[in-house]
Length: 289
Figure 1 (cartoon, one colour):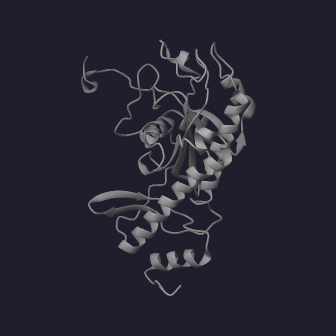
Figure 2 (cartoon, helix red, strand yellow):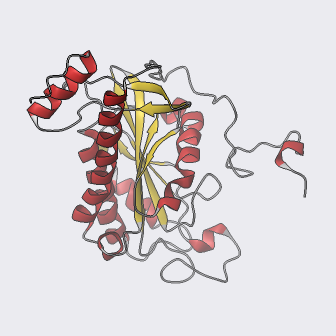
Figure 3 (cartoon, helix red, strand yellow):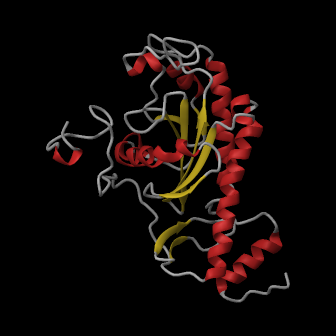
């Protein structure tokens, strides 16, 4: 079998063949990406931001557990959240099933290339995906992908992946060892627009889950889990950019020879801690706070 680099003329678009992100993403001119970033940052600020992002992402997963009520989430911890930069590069994995996040970047980059023009990517949108041609371990691991905007520009992505009890297919539980086509493994979700500008498209979602020759066996349970997906994402969006909340410096950081993309808006809820962070960023810390 030839190497990918030797397959001249092949189109790795996630449709006819598996998706391979190009070096330069083809993003619609309708979508503006926030790319301004600091190239240097002092060590104290770096550690404050780094640990805050870690706790934000961990809260991301804990909120799924509380809202879902699913033993898969609560006891098996078969989920994982992530934060990515505006161009789909990773910032943080969660501490749960980390392999789930390994293909999050390809899903985000596919959305940037194939959804930024039609239907578009807007503030309040949330996409749903389990397409193995783009990036999925198996179709039961359903991913929620949320763009985060700041002053009209796409600032970052908040995502999570949660294992579903059943997503259809030829056997209950959607893990058929004898399947010969992708459809036999369950409903294929091709970066479906689950939430449109803050409105859950519930009727369209149920129609998606119940379509095809092997639909989901309990779509009501799927929708309940998807509400947990969206609820936790909404909770996390409180801690990343929003025009009506406090700002703390965001951007890329050159540290230890690596470019680490730091995303931050509301570090912590406590006013004293937020004040200290702002002082650190201004270079005038009062450590007595």
